[in-house]
Amino acid sequence: MIGILTDILKLSKEYSDNNGADSIDAFIEWLCHRNKLQKPTKKISNSSLVFALNRSNSKMRDMSRKVLKSCNLNSVDDYFYLQELKKHKILSKSVLINSFDHEISKGSEIIKRLVKSSFLIESTDAKDKRVKLIELTPLALSALGVLENQLTQIYDKKFESYHDGDKELFLKLLKKI
Image 1 (cartoon, rainbow, N blue to C red):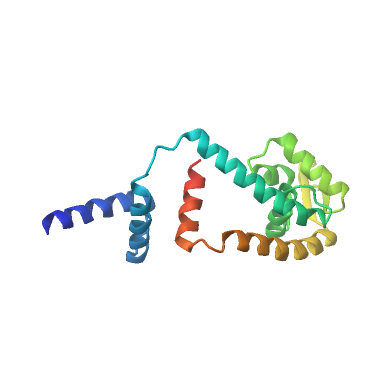
Image 2: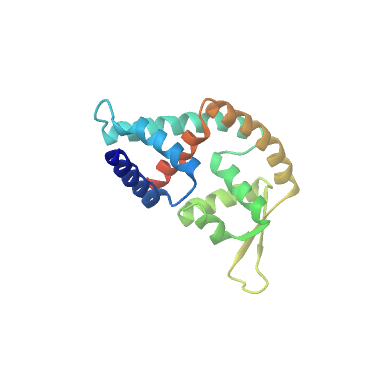
């Protein structure tokens, strides 16, 4: 019995070191997932992980792209830029680009494309003429209304078989990359 209690204490410490949450339910869920993942059946190469991640990413982008085209958006990045602006109403160009860890050139191209398509309005900050402010147009808000529903259906279908704990673990693992 002492050995079991010692093991529980070690696992509890490992859990708190990696997760910080202190609810018994979260610990039990972590323990279940940990035991599922603890003993791999074979060694997995990093290149096979990268391949699987890229393949999955490509499939999701392809599925999303079909819906996005219906609203004249070119990429998932376009959609997420609009989503970010919807949350904040107005952002400086640099803050918007940096929120996605994009290079300035890539983010500027996305913004330029969205301005040209009448989804965004670009203006100069009255306090600092060097700062460009970006905000959504009514057309963008309308498109987002349609897209959010359609993309949610696609994403819900893709992940419907995943338990919330699996989704949480997957997200944690992705954040470590």
